[in-house]
Picture 1 (cartoon, rainbow, N blue to C red):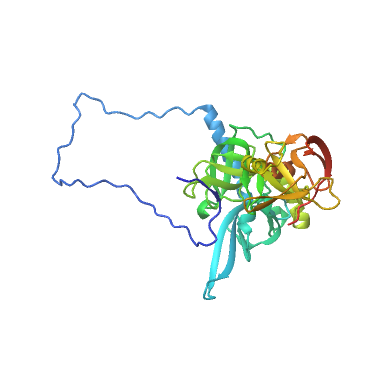
Picture 2: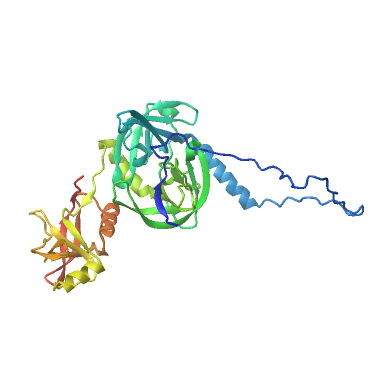
Length: 388
């Protein structure tokens, strides 16, 4: 069975999710004749059930979870994305999807996933008190799968869900997810942090680093909802699940609070987030490509790295000086081969994307380790904004 990465949101091509609830009843025997009933001996006492004692620590945990839901639940919203498309015969086809979000500040800004609001023509928000209202799109960042929308509410009617980027998330800690799976509003699930530092793909085929893996049940409709510690603080934004069926299989991923706090203020202020880039075009030197280039007579002095193939005129990095045909592909060679940034090894485009995204910013100068003319050296590079 192939596992696929499924964005945790109801499909925009659907309408309502179908449910079938069956009740288990007594099974009829093929032989309908009455059967004698078993009798206990008169001297045998009837068995009695004895409840297991409730451990004090279990009661304390339950109390914490209840308190988290009581305080945070009103700050979690259901988001409906509506749009109108046209089929082959130009007939209008309504599309609707749903996801989750939470209030970020008292100005009515709501954090959610980009894929929850993608291509929306109308956005509606359902509050905990049953009210529904339209929302305006404020800003989006597809590369980090984050978006901000806004509703008009008096500050006193907004329950802000605090984001704690300083909280030290550790494997084994309890976490709580609150969202709207399958349209079931403000559903709470409990789990633990299963792993840290995961890398997941974003909606625009880039990579999101430092993702939190959890076994808290996350299903379609949970997207954009908060992943919380037992203090009721956001440690991540639920974004995706790994599942063979589309439902929770115990492997969910959340965008970390550090990314939320880095991106969201920019989305509120400008509607966008500038992504750092070296400003050059690269060719990933995989083991297979290195073997092919060596067979073609090229001297490749590394076993992995990123070959610089094109640079702007003012770049401190050097691009390829000649092209070599390998099969049907022309590979520009002779340029720098990047092997590390700020002392951290990079062997793939994914490594470089995650490192720049999580540890640098536009305008910052980084030290890039390259192999040039067969020798390793360090080159300073000022990061540019990634062209969208």
